[in-house]
Image (tube, rainbow, N blue to C red; front, side, top):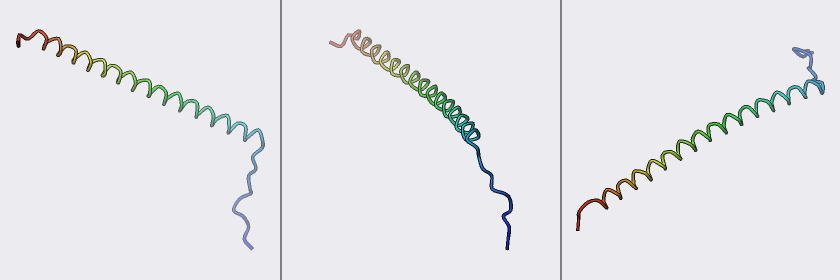
Length: 69
C-alpha cells in the first residue's frame, strides 16, 4: 500500500484568525487603491467638462461679437 507523500496539516483557530486578518488588510489596501483611482478619474473628468464648457462659452461670446446682422 502506498503511504501519503506528507502528513496532513491542520490549521488552528489562531492560524485561521491570522490568515483572515491578513486577507482583510489586503482587501482594505486594494479598496483604498481603487477609491483613489476613481477619485483621480472623477477629477480629470470634471476638469475636462469644465474646460469644454469654458470653450463653448468663449465661442458663443465670440459669435455674439461678430457683426453679422
